Length: 613
Image 1 (tube, helix red, strand yellow):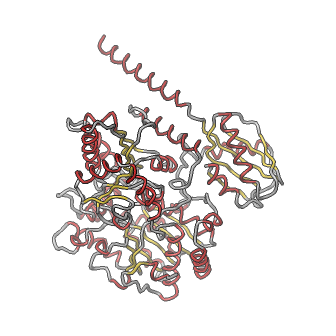
Image 2: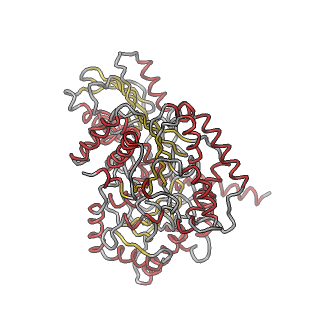
Image 3: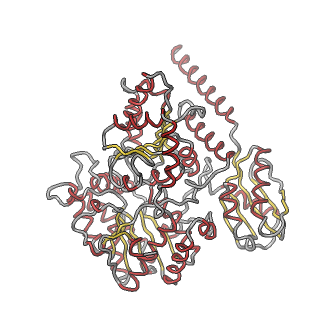
């Protein structure tokens, strides 16, 4: 009994110490705003930090956003608040206000066109209602409308994208939007959050809507048992990262087809009211026959997001061929097959004439990539350190450099290679009496990713082995909330980004790192060599060669001239086609061609080549 009391006492003391460390972070209190614009005056109601209304005056439309952001930043500092989001009323005459709040104030805008004056009680309730749309970490909750339509608002407006897009490309975007006219474009994928597809759809859908396009985004019914099949027996098998005994069984096929029947019933009206439908990845592929039965005139684009081992899908008797043959009975019915720009990802059964190449893209203005003010960067670093403390890890030492790999905890992401490479470079640095860096291994989860928790556990198990145990004081491992700005800051502040995936389509984190001037050390696998200019913007090593990775890390950590040259080159060598506006151009081109001609004459070419200047 005494031993048990002593153990409980120690636990309580540890918890008290963690609480004291979190308190010392002095994290701002989250606050949500209702903003009422009346003439040249803005009135604010907030949650937390005092609920009384306050106001600011500005001179005309041009000064509205900047004046409001400046005022809110001053108030936030004085009250130790973090303004997360604002519900704006009466903003019709200030269309750029939402972009300014987002890009300059790091405040998510929600715009209401109703400018009718309301009472104080109304605005206080509006602020409280807005707060209810977020979780305790300040992350927007996923909101699904009827038929599992993802509700997604716009942060940056069309004019903000125009400013960062070459004039001729923005003109092309407008021309294609006008050509598409009143037709209806529908996107269907597995999940509303987690992974590159959801990130791209979350930006692309509102951009298309701002162009007047009738664009909508829907996701599948959440069935864990179905996602267990699509993850382990679709994705992992096609990428050749599944265990040797993993096979797609008859019962798996039956369960998947039943799930597709259920989804087709839910999406019946959506199918009827679509002219072009984009099916993302294998998970919803089984919807295609249902879609054509309900709407025979619809045009279908199938997008393959993953690295498919096409050599194995073409080889009789392999689990890859069995899985691909099952899926291709649906995929072959699509009018267009979109692949990453790596032709070895395309099985030979896919007709070349209807195949096009198109890369994954980043949105320069979303939370993952936009520039952040120093006080916002400081806030998100505190959020990260709080997360570490809550998970019984030491805070990140911001005075020391760190390496980072941001990726899902997935068997294809090469996390054991990251740890081994870190061990090797630390060994070299220690031998030469040089300080060692820190390492962050982190990522989000996704509801269709059943590997996440097991891989996280395996990561910790590996770090506790005798070979790596001494690394633990310098390693931070975290499953992060879906707070985009947090990933933005962690990547932006990193010394070097690692991406040691064994299988990869195109990894948008590589492009994001390069755009921030962070050199990347990665494996020469999948589409990654298309993103990095070897020995110019980063280093490419053969898959599995952790000794080479450690050598590149050592050179970047110890040769400041080399580091600065590579850092400066990183942003210069980012492919201009890997941006959201180019992605919108590509999709609108494919959609208008399908509607006008009934087919795509792709011939395995990049969509950008088909679109032309």
